[in-house]
Amino acid sequence: MLRIVAARDGGLCRIKLPGGVITAAGAEAVADAARQFGNGAVELTNRANVQLRGITPANQDRLIAQVMAAGLGPASAGADDVRNLMLSPMAGLDPSAALDTRPLAAELLQTLEQRPHYHQLSPKFALQLDGGEALAELQHAHDLWLSPLWLHGELHLGLGLASAIGNALPVAAVPFRQGVALGLAILDRFLALAGPAPGRMREVLERYPASALLEGLDVYQGPFGALPPRVVPPALGLHPQKQAGQVSVGISPALGRLPADALSALARLSCEVAQGELRLTPWQGVIIPGVAQAQAQAVQAQAQALGLLVDHRQPLAGLVACTGSAGCQRGLADTKGDARQLATLLGRALPVHLTGCTRSCAYPSVAPMTLLAVSPGRYDLFSRDPHLPGFGRLLGQDLTVQDAAMQIAACSRSTFDD
Image (cartoon, rainbow, N blue to C red):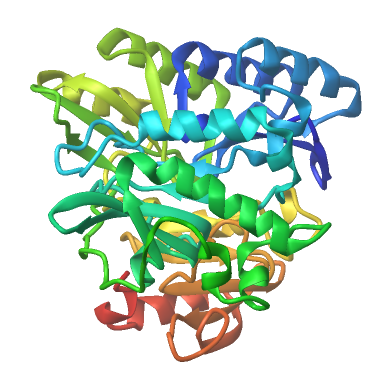
């Protein structure tokens, strides 16, 4: 947030939200900042954060001051980059979860912010604290993650390194109350091994075995068996809460871009029907928690009236697109504009990722189908294949959006299994 970076469409400001949570007052402040200093839109990221675009150099200091005054900034300038901690948007709400991760997350974030030792971590160094919720991001690779694991009949937290929860085995485990201490001990070891310019966990594991990070620690060492399988439900829709009579309402702006006025409206709505809180999701959406079951459909109707998606079957709900050439120097095509055209041509929700370059900023894993821009309005089409690197199997080259839509529509349903 304190380091606004230059982009094709002006300055870019990323605001990290602890656990993806923002109060109604905070959301109003972000919306107001987008109107005053940005392009009038708020982008939701796959890290459950927000970012503002189109900021002129003359407005940067005013923007930062306004966001800091709203309580959305770090405890100190050096702490801004270390707040990369992902939780489920249903943390503390999901009746099927093994534990409420919020107290552990608050303790971990406070320590990371207050101890300058941890400010050496790369801005991209990412952590995940999983409580076993149904609605959880299991495919993002994190440098370090903790996830529920039952050992000897007691709840523990399994530790994973440089991997995603959904496709890796824990390398160690501790009783769940010791999870924060374990995470910090691993970070200490990582910084000691990484050298003067710490990068990512995978880089350290290329030089040292995982046992080097665990040596001398009081842990159960793995690898253990696979974590219990989970089928992640669509984020859009209604999610039952453990709080009696309440649900969380999942909604999303098309392609992750939320008009500032719509964010203000959601903030007001959350105060009227719930507890004045919004939770961002890793799928570029929003959850309004604490809605009375009897009011849930009315909330969905109001969100739809704002132009937001409320059903995972809507054609745009299946698509992910990066900023594209409109805002990024690397982008070779107007990915968001082309995604809207693709949604109209497909007429149904299919999991397709449009990326303006090979960096794949909007989708950190590999989508079932990927369109990689090669020039304005033209793409190479890939189908995910676990046996091939990159985006997978090449299905077509230099395709127009219309040609790509025809090829995608002709694919078998199994191609889109996610």
